[in-house]
Image 1 (cartoon, protein in one colour):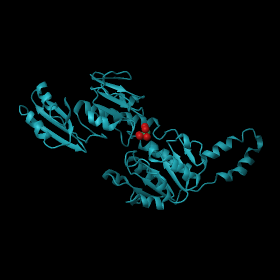
Image 2 (image 1 turned 45 degrees about the vertical axis):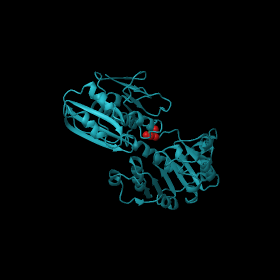
Image 3 (image 1 turned 90 degrees about the vertical axis):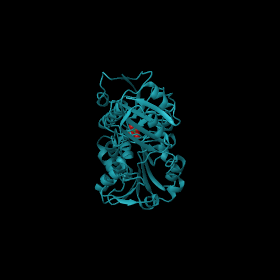
Image 4 (image 1 turned 180 degrees about the vertical axis):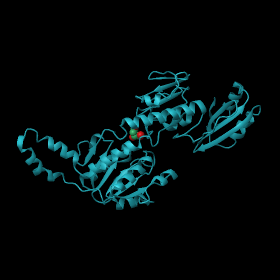
Length: 385
Ligand code: MLT
């Protein structure tokens, strides 16, 4: 029986995929084979030896200590694209709200309560303070053309914007999905120098943290509007606030407010609502559960953030899955130790410092063989399914 620890509330649309004869799940599981998580932080969680995989129902994985998981042979999955439409819709809302002073006007109009028959007169008199430009014909820079960035770029283009896209890691699928009218630029400088609006759709990692800082802001157009529905760490808070004070940045729209920016008149913030739709919660839960099941039952890896993609149809009587360091001679040592078994099929894939080997074999895989594989230097985890 596979034990799954559900952290956060995971939609039943996902959980219903688990066969009750093979899986049990809940919030109190002592030695889980898998964890399903949304936004709960796992940074202070001690992972038990039993833990094989973590399924993150969402795209960002900064609530998971990914490097520590890799070292322990724990595969971390995410659900790219499953919430992309929800986030895209929120970004479009933010785009319009960064132009038209909708949020302030809504707060102001409520102050007219009690004005009786004068409300319509006061509305007409006061509305000019909330004038804002149309987005049509303006230039939008999309930084990051993954599942969300592509949808945002295409939708903004359909709303009449001239869209610039930047992504040095653009995938073939991304390129196919992108409208041919999007201007593909090779440097961030081109985005900064040309765009009236800039929207961020990249993960927060070593390379991207603090991307929006005093120096990048200085090379942007005066009065630029910045949207951040990706991660708060992409922005240096003090530099952003200074630029808002100087009106170099006209508006900052974010799903990741900090205490320092909450009361700034140039900031419109939301409580990380981007993916908060029932559709997206269901899509993410379903995708995370299916990825976890395929790994636990078949060893197949799809949409992992720390190990290579690796899938093969089952053959032979048993499958041996080995997570190991990406170093020389390991594969030959593995096959030497399997000399008494017939290898029907095998697959080896690597990603950075780590690699994964799956072998379908005929015959009985004894505990002695498993121990020999485990003792190979560089081998992190061995499983027989
Ligand atoms: C994501 O990373 O998928 C989004 O920010 C939404 C979420 O955190 O669940």
